[in-house]
Amino acid sequence: MSNPYVLAITPDGIVDSLLVHFNSLDVDVMLGFYDKEAILIDAAGHPQVGTAAIATELKKYFSFGLPMHITARHIFVAGDIASLVLDWSIVGTGPDGNQVHIVATANDIARRSSDGFWRYLIDNPFGTAIRQLA
Image (cartoon, rainbow, N blue to C red):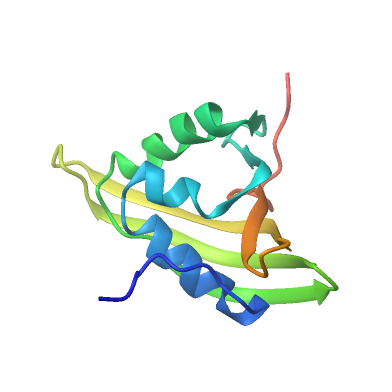
């Protein structure tokens, strides 16, 4: 049986890899998608740095128990760096019976690691949103 959680070996494969990792709804699986120096920008615009902080933020998304859907708007590549602009959504009925409707455009950065796999370096799920930082 092949591992469904493989990482992308080309920039064009990053989105498919992201979806498989995210839709596992498993924090440990998803953490494997991130570069060791990764940050995740929370909805308020604050960088979450380190595995524990990223895991805490991921648990918020996974608590809905719903899959993510993505349409890639742009993927630009310069050497070992890829810039991704992704329209994404999490929509449906959560485990508590409440409706979930999260729709946003991400502005993410992935990096090809020395092992040849692409991982997220900056995960900015609300990247095009205007935010006021305190």
